[in-house]
Image (tube, rainbow, N blue to C red; front, side, top):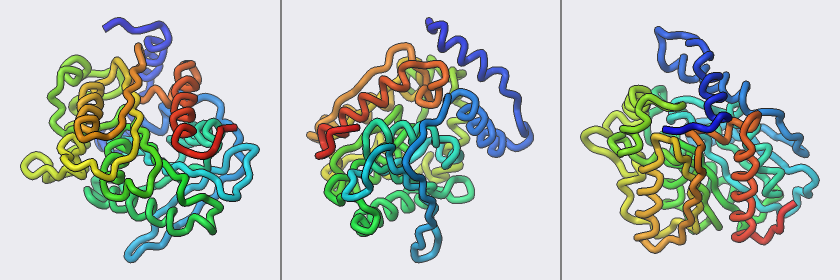
Length: 311
């Protein structure tokens, strides 16, 4: 495994982040992600407006953030539903704030960020149900949100990529495009890339096994395809999809396999391979130029499928 000087610098930095609570791996993971993103994401871009709302569903409230891009009118805006990563157990508004701000400004679309319920407190299908329900809510309330209901796409990163892929199989007819950023797609963790990168960088196999157990406790014996997207057979509602793959990523092979499954089902899929990159590189804008490159690529893909022409 040959790493560039920038990636070596990042890994050295990550190794210096001390354990916050070694007696509680869940709390430790959550705080580690918060620290990593705070230290490596770089300067946050200004946007026109950020609104926070709690959307009342039958038995719960789902927090969302609405990001309005810089220099854009909110009338009949195109929109992107964003589903964050964090192994289904971590992450939220603050860990992905810098990424979402950049996406909003570069795409020129309003971004709706879903703060879905996390495992193990709320195992599958709680988080997925939140994502499906909010996606439907956005469409149903598009006019009052200043959104064009016919110009909506979805983006998910890592665990959020798994959730987005499953959302699309359920309501993909409402979406113009899908982007999956280094998606987590398989709970087996037995691919060649997992063997190569089982001890990192960024992810490790022990943590992945525990996260999947927390998220989908029945997954070892009775895996549900909506929890484990590599098992999905029916992609009939899935829109055109862009998949970003990082070279030095344990999730690389399962992301490529999921992409192939979609292609085999007749879904237009484009795979973009980011050489030298590691899992989570979208959070490393302080050091990596590839963050802007990837954001520009996602914006171009979105513009191909939306009426907007960008900034």
